[in-house]
Amino acid sequence: MIKDVCPSLTPLVKYMGVKSVIVCSVKAAHYLKSSFSIGISLLSINEVLKKYTEQI
Image (tube, rainbow, N blue to C red; front, top):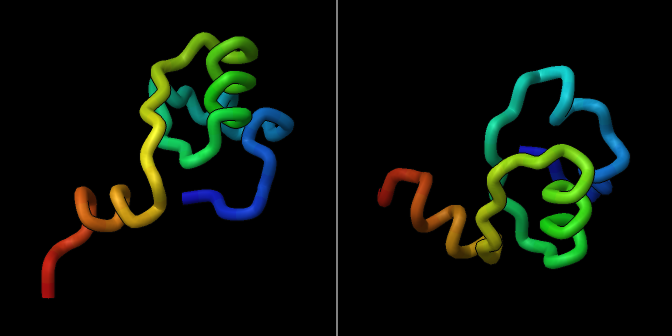
């Protein structure tokens, strides 16, 4: 998870071989899709936490 960083300006996506990402920003989704041609899921932070963390 990367927080408070513009992912469209970071080379992490390219160099780590990322195939898809989850973002909570329409702007990030647009730039990541057009810059790196990867799969994008647009979810809120709450939706991500509910979906990908264990319920205690």
